[in-house]
Amino acid sequence: MSDTEPLTVLERHVSYFDPDGDGEITISQTYRGLRGIGVGALIAVLLTVLINLFLGYLTQGKPSTRVSVRDIARGKHPYDTGTFNVNGELDEAAFTALFSAPTASPPYDRLTAAEIRKMIVKRGDPKKPFGELGSVLSNWFSGREIQLLLCVASDCTKRTESGEERPAISLRTLRRFYTGHLLFLLARHKRIKDSRAHGAR
Image (cartoon, rainbow, N blue to C red; front, top):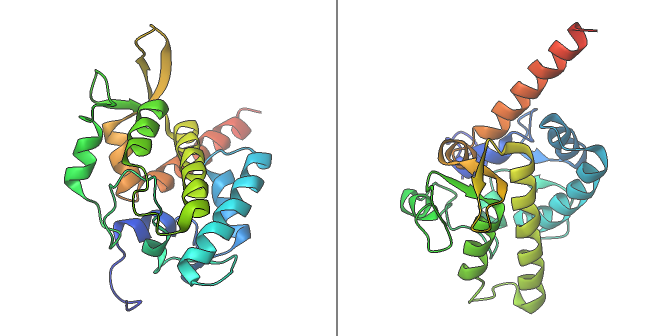
């Protein structure tokens, strides 16, 4: 793909971590990007290593700690929601299906981490393109991705069958995540919040 072609939604999503626009995401950029949306320092370090080793290898086709933005579609792994198609574009039907899946419960305008996780596990990894070990790692990595998403982007709650209130993410916010806008918005909100906190001192 030419560098002059418009970014796909998946490429736009990860371009948040490529502020200099050189097409590659380094370890330091991933760490700064995670910290910029409110992830704690220790967790950011662990996730940075995991993300860059995992996606660096998949996008570069060889061991690497640099993630290629233009090749991020190669980083699609089993145990995902199916919302991004093979080209890294948003699959509207798959997105809508998230909120009407058998694993979801009312109200259907929001999802908890457990609901997303159940749907992903149900999709599974039938073809196992990365083998048995790759399937296990993809399953584990997927779980961490969901935890991170709900940690930084939960904007509502949802009552479980047992009556507990759980953090949830709304349809509107999840759409922003899949269209590549959410991380930029979260970082902007954090900068504003931090600026106000410093100004109040």
